[in-house]
Length: 87
Image (cartoon, rainbow, N blue to C red; front, side, top):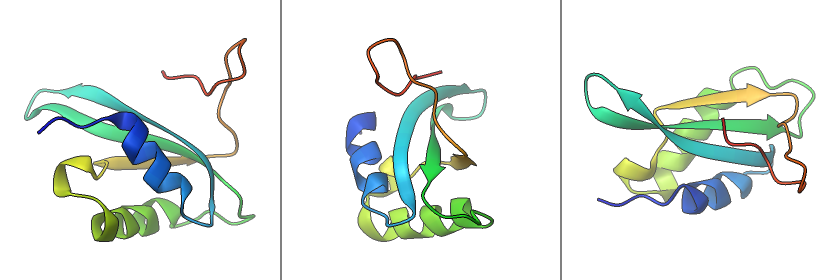
């Protein structure tokens, strides 16, 4: 199944506690590639938001589109063009 990170990012941004999201495929020795997401939060207390977002994504996305790991950060870095950096 082909997964487009932009579709997953758009879905994550629909959550009220998500300001922005970056989704990338990472190499994984066990399964080849896994999706990971980094999100910036609009909430003052993001504890547990990663787990909440995974559960939320499972309700809205097909299984291959659900990130295996979601990391919550204060803010995402931006490139010189103002877009979120994909690391």
